[in-house]
Image 1 (spheres, rainbow, N blue to C red):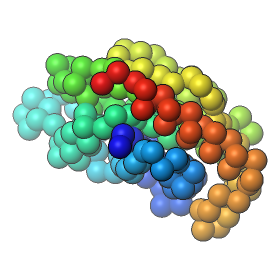
Image 2 (image 1 turned 90 degrees about the vertical axis):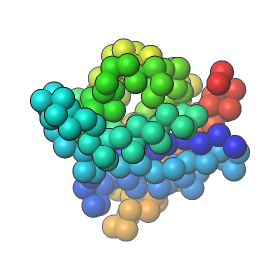
Image 3 (image 1 turned 135 degrees about the vertical axis):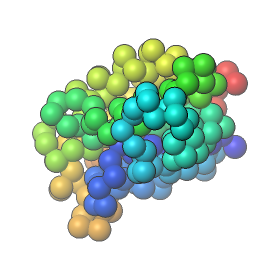
Length: 186
């Protein structure tokens, strides 16, 4: 059964994007396994630190999980109309050393989704990820989009998805991405 890593770009305890990943796991078809992953604990990238100490343990562990998976979902918040710095920083660590990029990201099926309290969904953040996805050699899935706007009314106070329209979109999104991953070249 194919495995997909769901990587949330927020470490906030009540993150709407963590709630979206939990809902995605519930909506996913039984033909795939989704494992959650976190960027928590990954320090700011510093080339001097990399030269002195190598890849930090949280980044090394996450790299190996992604390298072993069949697909990757980037569940991205949108900060100031773009990618959250902490999320991009984590991907920067995961791409080190550069010789690991093909093993970790090359040809990997990737999808993006995100939730925000604002009205724009996460359209700008997802668009901002595209050059990164391209340079890392991933294979983006463009079958559906999922930009969850007004997240405060889409999820309840416990982080449960309560909007039926978003649930339908999420179910279709997950079915489409699962199909893409299952029929992707190994």
